[in-house]
Image 1: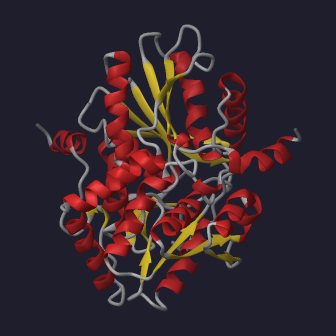
Image 2 (image 1 turned 90 degrees about the horizontal axis):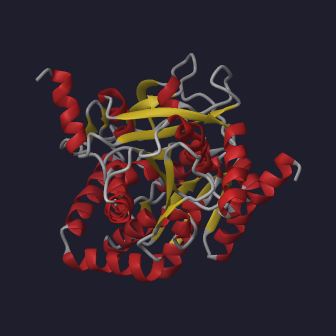
Image 3 (image 1 turned 120 degrees about the horizontal axis):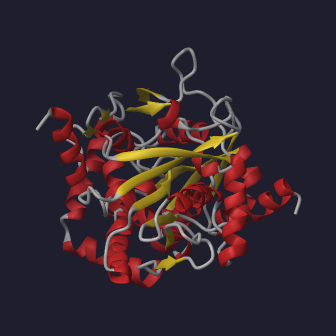
Amino acid sequence: MNIRAEILENATATLAPDSNGYFGEYGGPIDDPRVAPLLAEIGAAFDLAMADETFQAGLMHLRKHYVGRPSPIYPTTNLSPAGGARIYLKREDLNHTGAHKINHCLGEVMLAKRMGKKRVLAETGAGQHGVALATACALLDMECEIHMGVVDIAKEHPNVSRMKILGCDLVPVSMGTGTLKDAVDSAFISYMKDPENTFFAIGSVTGPAPYPRMVQAFQSVIGQEARQQFVELTGGMPTEVVACVGGGSNAIGLFSGFLDEPGVTLVGVEPAGKGLDTDKHAATLTLGKPGVMHGFRCYYLQGEDGEPAPVHSVASGLDYPGVGPQHCHLKDTGRARYESATDAEAFAAFMTLSRSEGIIPALESAHAVAYAIRRAPKMRPDQSILVNLSGRGDKDIDFVISELGL
């Protein structure tokens, strides 16, 4: 077996970092001496929690009785093309708070409380992570501070209202482009003012170790459920499993259930924005280069100076210039394929799914739906596509109506 084949076999069987937090050559620990001991403490606490049956039982109880898991798989009736592959949806949009984000937010807030922290702090783009975190903090009686770019606040005001009602301290971020990358920077500045009493709850599989593996572990419930459900529903495995990719948490959650099935193709769909031939996109794995940003090594979109480039997506949760190290590793090994969908395709998929199935998706999820719509007619009727419908579109409806002139 050649070296590349060995790497691919290992990536197919599992997706775990080495002792330093690297997935292949991506990820790793932060080199800031002020922060490294704090993150090492979180990593150690996470390992102890995951080995604690009481912690696991508490998380499972909340997943079932509070979140409403398992979320179902729905075989679409009108979206699936005649003569093409059947399209199935993993309905994460039916979770409490309307997206997959609640999966890791409950885990992180439970961990913060277990560690004796007083405050949970985070960034958010589309606001789904912020809403889910504020929800978990309200449930578990923790202080919550959310940093959100002013551009995203204007686009996602329903989620802004939810966060305020849930009692979090919402911090508008106007520096830079006023979007997700800048919200991350702002949140980190706030974190360093009182790290001893604060838990930084990163909203995706991004950032330095231990965050990528921690969020992956909490999100892997998606893939575990999906695999069992799909077999029960169809008697076999899906041909392709598909999810949108910004930071990459919902995708890695779905992929986790199928890594050891080499016959299942893993497809991540990035935001092509106004087009890959413009500078108005966030197609990190398509056009980015490896480097270090926000304390970890990954593919990211870079300016001439090597700094993270301004990015664009109609979906606020996808406009991040980097991506989780797991996805970088899966790209390099060839275990996963990364496609893209434009703003226009996402809008079209948003409307098509809404009017064909009565399901309004988040604009983030609409990117994955757009790929499935264009891909399914090219496949055989005995093949299938399982799309992770990572969130519902309540937060996007006013924006979509305004943009499309409905």
